[in-house]
Image (cartoon, rainbow, N blue to C red):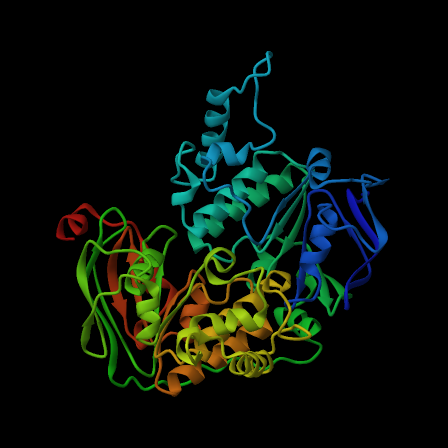
Length: 504
């Protein structure tokens, strides 16, 4: 069987950084080939070269035996190479259908847009994926997870020869992942070549036949997935044997956060929960359950219709996130590129941003305390092992996992007591996850409280002390430490019954 796509002796250098060196891989029809490695190992760089977003410093890409001389990413798309990027590229002001067919809209013979066909074709793809979305919906109102599913639907609609998926499940719940994997299997049966990038090792045997391991810009190994176990793959990634994560015993202390009967019309209803110092409280549920919307309302990013929020026993009314920050509350948002970071600013500036009012030099006017900003950002660059040569690197040039570390750094530097983490390990590799969990544990052991939204059920089981499960905007139940299990979470995450809706 001849490969459909080949990369031969690919190298890529950026100023001061060697991202890839002598990478050669063959990708075959009807096969899903995984690219695995730590953050910054070069996986996303290779994908961007395949998609013609980057030009290689050396080497070549071949499609069906012919060298690809694409000038633009559109040339690659027209040739049959479709990419689902880790960060979505959805135009928020357009509808789902308009996004799915942007640049390749169906038209009448006279050249005019055939909107009816575009919307019906888009809806057919959404229905096939069992997504409860209307193709007419404007994308600005969708959650990050729903945007990811639209991105996936957009690629499926193109019937490409080669489909590249870069961390497609990082913000999806189990139900949406099952839907995605079913589409992957269908595309494989149609002889589509699949390239799959993931940090979730458990996904590999589900859909992948082969995997290439990246480390520090090099391809260090290639395996048939059925012939190796997870430990072998992880050890190849990090270059050493990685110890197992051991969940520590946390001791809940005084209550720091209490939410009573919080409601936001059309989003969630009658939500009540509490979080204590010294514990990690998780929120689980399907995409669209309302978890992110609740956290945004608690943080003052949106307004609740009714309900109360208490911090350290005192009722608070946050009209703006700055007020929550002043009360030592932080929120690491799900969509780090849109709402978590200033991508055109440096690590130093991003770490200092929430802290400016508290560390400014107070003369006739408040001036930025540059020394504090430099010292603090450098401290956290080393402590969290952010892969960047210095703190002046722009956050837009960092890998997804390292961007997430910068977000955590800014809240740790702010000295927050309550830290809300929405999909905190999205796009973070297995080694960095262990480091991230250790930082979370240190935070709660020092008296902080973490409220974590996660669609990764094994992660919840691994780190959470208590779990609230949401479905269709209401809390279905609370699980204690002893009750946390996949079965209990799944049973509570099921759709809300009519009786429960009436009670809510």
